[in-house]
Structures are given as structure tokens and as C-alpha cells.
Length: 364
Image (tube, rainbow, N blue to C red; front, side, top):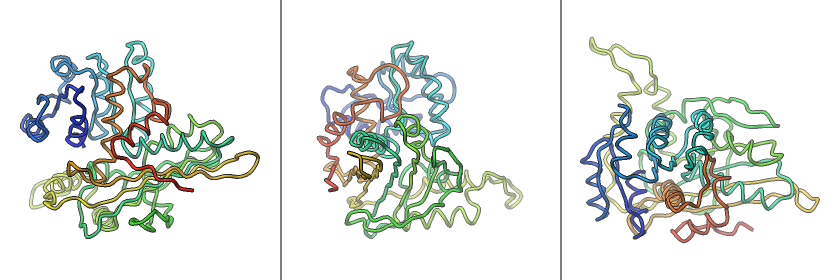
């Protein structure tokens, strides 16, 4: 996702691009691929990241990293005087990040949490839908994707996918936040063609953590994911046989942590040499009252592969954070720590995304 965000930022000549990675060779590979920018090696966990960011001259950090590292990188950005954005904190980390609001405001810096496709664009679409009603009662968010002929692959961070299939999900219902088992609450949801009807289920996500507080009067906020069937079935099997466990196992006289081994092996999966042909759709179904009568508004975003050869999934996740980073660098986001739905004016932000290639089809 970081390399994809770099490709998308490189579309803009007014961006001075720094590609930062714990391995210099990977950063250099990205810079060589896009033909511009500077490659820097950084230290995320050793306590020097603030110094590294300052030395590199960073003004805004678009953190495309495993969510468990969000807070250390956020602290480093604050120490270095940088604006900050990330791709999400799986609910619990997001709540901890929001506690840094006063410090970012005092420093005159902005931080936007969970500004990918989901969370991120889901939040902004939900806000736009709520703004079109006189009263908002419920928000149901759906993310579906299809890759015709595609096999098992990593759709995004291995750590995050495994957590989504194992950690209890959080849903906000009847005004109460509650915990439910991972991958439960399955419904059949009709996405537009070519995705079609898919099974969508609860996973741990941060939309409910913020929308339940930022949308006045809302009583229900639910998020459901519909991965391509081969990917969903593959991860269910890996979890079922215990390969997501963090309990050490004795194997051949040695000790192995199944989850650590699984992640290492997943990272060895080869990238497809074929051009991507996936399609992804996000729907925000917002129900409430309009002009005294019950009403439901559906806000939709569609992603397809880009001229640069980026997959729909990668493009959809990376374009919101790439866009918000430019907004932050130009002073268009106010100081403080913000969830996406209140960080930016929804219509202006969606207009920028549309110019970058995101499709917002009419839903009737």
C-alpha cells in the first residue's frame, strides 16, 4: 500500500516525495519504478524515527504500515513536527490514537486516522448520506470485491487480515457498542455487477468507533466485509487449522509460533504477472427520516485498475491517504486528531477523489 500511495502521489508535480522504509532497497525500488523521489531507510521501533523524519525533511507522513505500529509512528510524527495520516487502527488502536488530539492541536499539526477505502472513504460516504437526511437512525457499511479467475492472495496487510478473521468485531446497535464473534452476522448483499451478490460478515473495523459519536442521533453502525470467495475461504481454513494462533507449538524439537510462520509464508506469495482485473465496491446505506417520512440513502464508490497497472483494491485503499496527505501539506486540514468523516468537507474531498479516478455512480 505504501508503494501504491507513492505512485499516486507522483501523479502530482508539486509533491516532493520521500519514500521511507525499514529496508533501503525496497524504498529505492519504489523510487526507481516511479522515476522520482528520494529513498530513505528508517527505524520504526528503535526510538529514532522522529529524528529520521526530521532528517529526511518530512512535512506530512502517510503511514501505510501494520496498524500495531500506528501509535509509535504517530508519536514520532508529532516529535518531528509532521502531519500524520494512516490506514486504520482496527477500532481499539483508533480509540487510543484519538487521545493524542490535544497534543496535535497544541503543536498545530493534523492527524487523520483510518483514511483508506475502509475505513476512510466509508466514513466520508456515511457522513454525506447522513447530511442528506433530517434524522439518521442507522448506518450499514459494505465492502465487496471480485477478481474473475483470481486465486488466493493477500488483499492487504497479512497481520490485519488475520486479526479480522480472529478478533471479536465491534458493532453499535440500539445505542450500545457490543462485541460479537469475528466473521459472524453474515448477510447476502447485492453489490452492482460485476461483483453481484456476496456474503458479507462482521470484522473488527474502526468505523463504528467514530461514526457512533460524530453522527448525531445514530443508533446503529455496522460494518461488513465481503472478500473474494477464494480469499475468504482460504483465510477461514488457515484460522480453523490453528495457523493464526499465537501460542507456541513444539515441532521437531524446536518451538514455532504458528501466526509468525504463517505471516512469513504469506509474504512469499508471488505477485501475479498478469494485469489486474479486480473490481471493488463500497456502499454506505444510511437510513432515517427525510421530510417526515422514512428514507434510505445509498452512497457508493467503485474502484477499478488504473492506467499505472495498480489493482482496484490497492488503488481504492491508497488514493484516500495519498489525497489527504496533499491536503495536509497544503494546510487544508485543521489541527488535531480527526476521524475521516469530520477531517474534511465531504463533497470537496470526494470531488478530488473523482478527479483521481474513483467512480461514484448514482444509486437512485
